[in-house]
Length: 159
Image (tube, rainbow, N blue to C red):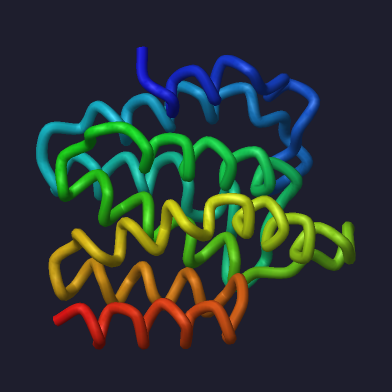
């Protein structure tokens, strides 16, 4: 069992909400399906079925976003296929760009959760393909613009 799977197991998903005021109890299975997807098409199908309009919708995030960010960062510490890593980064980007009318502190708590994985993201940027490197830098910019500049400068000097 990887870090991502262990992080899923550590969350009380029934206590968290997704869109429509529903509980997030189906989110663990969705995250596992994403992590275990064998093709990008399969990962995309999981994305549309399980994340879009549930954990986030049109710049709105829901209560389960904070725990989801923690799980996604843990999953990046595992060996995952490139298509899964790319979807994780994309999901992080959407979760970190959203806000909540119901919980005005949720967006900042999500960014704080992501700050804990900043150096993991910096390492991901170092080893990622050019496309995924840009995705990682976009995620880091959502967390802290100055740190994104720092990571960008470090990447430029190392190439």
